[in-house]
Image (cartoon, rainbow, N blue to C red; front, side, top):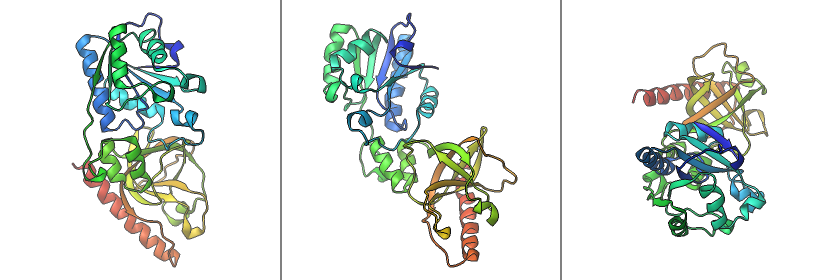
Length: 317
């Protein structure tokens, strides 16, 4: 899959293509419907499927300081899009100048002059251009002039976790923030992932017999609520069942919020300096401060047992 950052990286001889545009944070099941349809149309027409997305998130430029927590960094989104069959991803640097492009100018500069769109596939609520003035109807209206068609994909609704709401990144972020990682996974179609480099912490886990990978998360990462979770730690391509702790470590009066993962039943792991991924499967319990180290160790043993069971049940499906 090709990856371009900015319009200038698109090959000069790029031909017609099927395009879909959006932030696509998380590449959740609603996004998958839209992207999947774009890929399907591209295969029918014998042309590439292209996803256009933005960096940073448009809200950070339009309303500085309002950058939402991110469900997936751009490299992860690209991986997920590639799995869906996307041929190229175009990341447009979202600047103040770019935000002032009128809907018509956006269509001409991006869809017509550079990507030579044959079909544009979007959700019903897609908005674009200065002050988000462009609508799907306007996109289709100009399609008659610039020789492309527009297809709108209706989004399904979520189950119990979403209360019947449409799939959305906003809802997913809320569920993650509340610690409802199972509900978030229902929307994402997979467990929520947090990534970062393993750094040295206080090493208390090692002293207690449960060495953890202290993950320095990427900026703006959507991190679940404080608590203990079952999930997986992936390093160097190997996925390991894990007991994951998120919080300030109140047992030792900590103040800095961290994400730490203990790889269950693994001995002698040296992960310092590695970029790792932590996938959250299920909430186990909230953070607590125990009366003694012995009580803490008993709770950790129970946590590890429960996490081993949960990940094993998931993998056995």
